[in-house]
Image 1 (cartoon, rainbow, N blue to C red):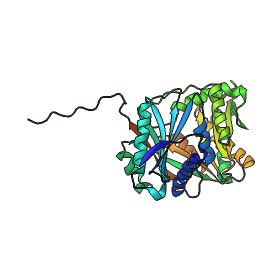
Image 2: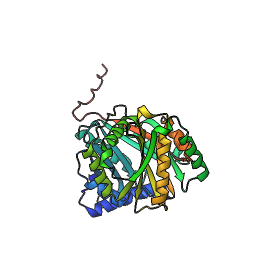
Image 3: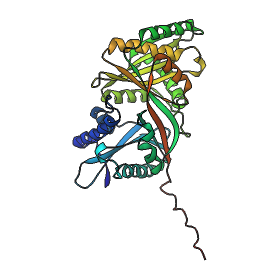
Image 4: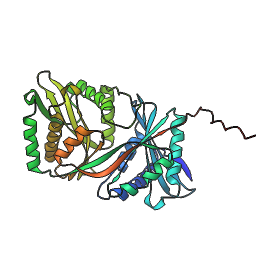
Length: 352
């Protein structure tokens, strides 16, 4: 069994890599489309100052790819960690493929000076108790740091329910001090400062299971870099923002991701409210507004997918009110690596 890096210029290699990941995804979520070949090409070839990705594959000599791995390296902060994905083709499991990939990714991370591997594994509720990740992750040195759930809202949403929630928003404390605006990304330049401030809040406000997670610095250069990545993935974002009328500041926003090659599904991205403006139902307000824009601009979408850490009670409450239903159980897994320069552990003295 060998694990090797995928050359970003290798079209055939990227296509084979993507096919293995998609086979693994379909085995868990047959009615959804995960990362496509377009996504794979985009991240593999992305060259920026804030993130980089490397892709790996496992195969036996002369054989097809059996499993794949990806590594996302933060380049600006959180330099201690790497986010990884390990996926094995359903026809080639229980042969040590996943173990070989996980160990190789650890070696690559150590060589890059990283000391932590982070991974999120989400599986359907019915499969969660017996899913292989429960035994595989501890076997290769990972520990569970935080549970969570994935949720799905079927569309069109329940009109009566959403209308009731509009009334909740309209009668929230200080409702007259706020208004909601919607648009398709990229964000207008005049909102850039507030956008960056809210992303900075989100970087440590969102539960992630990594106790060493550092606050992120966001600026226009970083925003534009992210927009370029999304464009190369051929996806677009719908945004709803809440403006504090007296100050003119944007104090909350929510975004939904759409892809032209998967027109029947969408993904809930960030929803964040500035700490100084919480308690006014702004999270609910921007999510409802985004539902309206989604219905107008992408009427073929039949569901929105989102995820919440179990400790994120405020956002779980909002999603429950809107009608999101739990479809998956997730675990944040973390592995602490021994530094590459660390000496081997000394053996105990031999008995006399």
